[in-house]
Image (cartoon, rainbow, N blue to C red; front, side, top):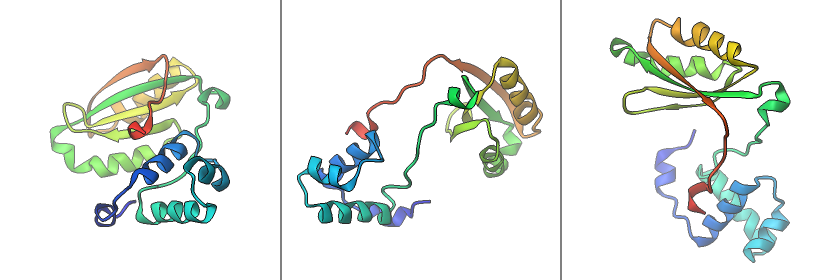
Length: 160
């Protein structure tokens, strides 16, 4: 997890923004490729990348796997509202979600819903069972709403 105090001390310049934009589009770019695109010496580029990682600006590098390749062609977004008396269980509920294989990502929200959960599944029955077994049966959960995802895309990260 990022150190908020450390992040407050970080000032990103135009080169940092360009570097982050390049990495957001393809985090596997080589240092040589990045340095050429930025017009920097490879050693300078590597030092900037290391500084961005150490400061917590770059939290991690990841790979996006096609859910269909894993036999999970269906995606859904499930909104979850916790019971008013169960708000103190939000951290525990989030930790439970982290351990479930269907979870692609989840968000803790402010507003009418407390969580938005992005899941992958084999079929609609798989989604139904997931909601029944892991959400509706949880005594902290007041209600859920499930929406099927027809298409999933990405925007340009941070306007870069």
